[in-house]
Length: 237
Ligand code: NDP
Image (cartoon, rainbow, N blue to C red; front, side, top):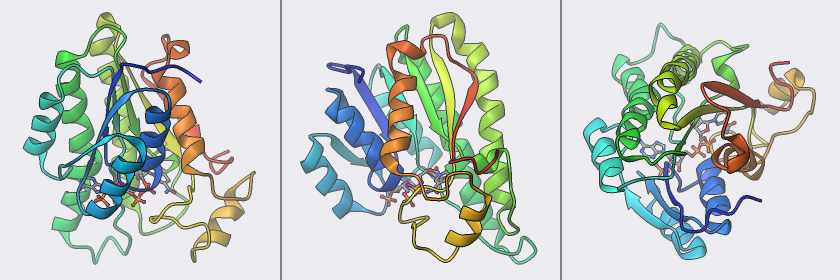
């Protein structure tokens, strides 16, 4: 396990699910962790009390609030952008405002947060964004906006890796498949369909994703940048 003692880590969207797993992991590895939340104040306060991390409210749909939060965090050793939403349904019936809000949270926030973090990041800084295997494969109807948003992160990582590489800052995308969270419960109605696509026929855990994030943030990943790291039980194999 890497030692992040004294390292400053900011997780956008850390109150529940995969984000909470990432907060727990970095806190257990000694980092000074701050995480944001939007709607889940009680869960955020409980996680802060459990881990010693600091919880702050910041809506990832609010571009300027995201930029301010990152700026106010000072020089970060690690930025993780985990906040993300899905809007399911017939593309012909969906509310354009709901789709644009998804793009704001899933695309605009990761971009602006990454750029703002890089302004103050020291050499060796790490940016990790949670994408999805749906950035590569979209086997279901009704999720085009989500797939688009996760594919967009791939181009972002490739481009910003070029911008930040000369300063020793890496940026990588972690692309989970089905992970057991409130957004995608292991016993949910889509279980059989999703497991049918997979080589390992179960949902993954937030801890499994957090392990990959921790490795990417640690010293062994110093030569890894501009890359997508899929952790999906073979969903896209
Ligand atoms: P959950 O819905 O379980 O949790 C989402 C987290 O993001 C919560 O902490 C939530 O905070 C936060 N969040 C959502 N919207 C905002 C916002 N506007 N501002 C700030 N924080 C926000 O989702 P998961 O843990 O399942 O997903 C986390 C990430 O992983 C997402 O990017 C998702 O796309 C991705 N992913 C998930 C997969 C899965 O199967 N679970 C598969 C592939 C990718 P709060 O409740 O406080 O608003």
